[in-house]
Image 1 (tube, rainbow, N blue to C red):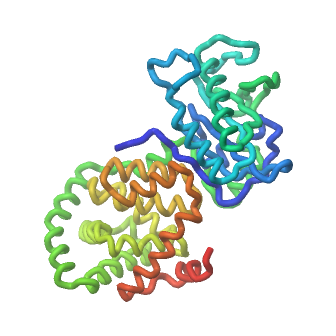
Image 2 (spheres, rainbow, N blue to C red):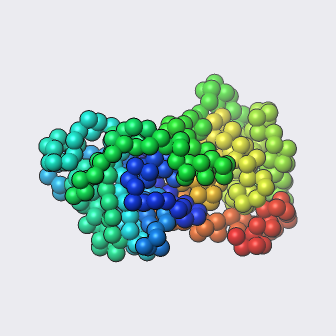
Image 3 (cartoon, rainbow, N blue to C red):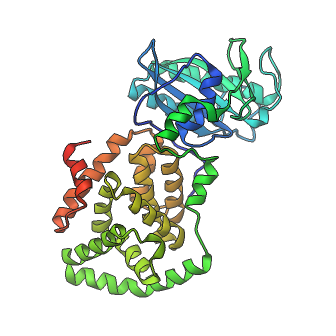
Amino acid sequence: MTSSTNPPTSELQPEPLHIDDPGALIAATPAMLGFLPVRSLVLVCLVGGPQYTVNAVLRHDLCWADEETGDGSGHAMTPVLQRFSDFCAREEIEAAIALVIDDEADGEVLAGGDRSSSARRHRWLAADLAEVLERAGTELRGAHQVPRIAAGERWTDLGRDPRGGAVPDPASSPVTAAHVFGGRVIRSDRGELEELLSPGLELRREALAELIDRARDRVRLARELGGPRASRKELEFVLGRIADESAESLDAEELVEIALALTNPAVRDCLFALALGDHADAAERLWLTLTRVLPDFERAEAATLVAFGAYVRGDGPFAGVALDAALEADPLNRMAGLLDDALQRGIRPERIRELAYTAFGCARRLGVRLPPAAESVHAGGV
């Protein structure tokens, strides 16, 4: 199963921004999301008025039903607007600003009652969004349309504000600079995220699938005979490969052993803790390697670990892409389904970290001490 949804993204820290300048807000949007959005509805959620700060940024693909004629009722975005409203009600969002990014409206003049179909759609979308947000206690302070986010593109207001203007260079945005200096990668588009998780050479995946099938019964028997000791051995093997940072140089036998270890819930549940500590980057490199080379069923577990790591650090777009990959590989993967549901509902990263905290106890029950840096984060209750 795949989804075109890029689920709501919650930022870990409020982001100061001059919200009364629509051009500056639009230019800062790629930095706040972590990638350049296209054909999207973006909702910038604000708290702390009257000196507002950005509390969260939500995004969804624009989707119009083929039969829509633009009468303003029952459009395909209605469930999306409701999810946005639910998030705002739960998080007590005071105000919000909407951005409609749609290159199909390129060259249209929305002010003055333009009658083009996309212009009408955008206006009705903004009006419907204002209505559902009002029921959640959130004021829609503005709604703006722009064909694409790039220097010099013209933005236009979707309400009664007669203003319009040019978008400044996103690369020069102070918000962009702050994110880049903070080490955050801003990707050119969502496709760049998908490419990181794309399956590799099909022949290699087929060869690994055959090796995994041959090893499956052996591993199952070892677990039945060894009990927790067998799970401990599997966990220690995976941790050893991560500590060696050898993801790119693993041979086929090692890949098979790790792939099968991830299908052991007792092992996988422990590995969520690695997202919190010094080994997070090395662990993610391994999960990404596995996601690209493993056959579908085992690929789902690796992609779920990628998604979890992205989620807890506040990278909602990457988490969403990884969960799409996991659920495409195994639609019945329970953990991927739970994380996807949480992300769709805008559950904050700090809530999801609770799963990582429980992983330390899982490891201790197997007699394994997780990396000290990770455990110190747990002890500190971050």
